[in-house]
Length: 127
Image (tube, rainbow, N blue to C red; front, side):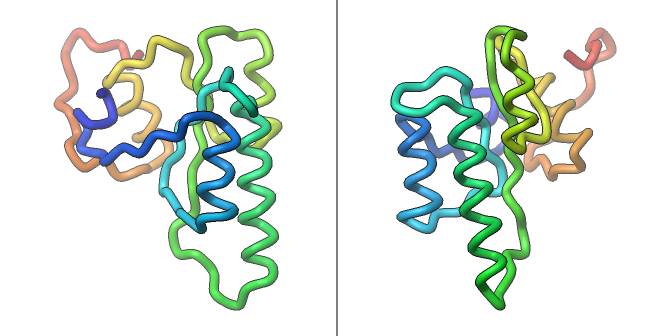
């Protein structure tokens, strides 16, 4: 819901293996991927690593490069093991619960275009 408030269209995968399949087998591409840590069949960090490995191999074997690379952000409810997201290639980690303000702050720090940017609240601390 927070992503929709910011004007993004949202696609959902049922688990990590499905997310990998969408990139590898179906050839789908997304500018931004929020990946949960704990999912059935394949955990988030493993899914990110597999997708990025596929994209790297694909761009190395292709004369056509993708103009817009995918950005991966990990989602977790605990700090333990969260560093696995960075090892896998995520650019940031968001800790649950994730708010619209927090998403906007992270996207702005990554210079990621936000379709419906929210006005800053005078009481907002950026989290």
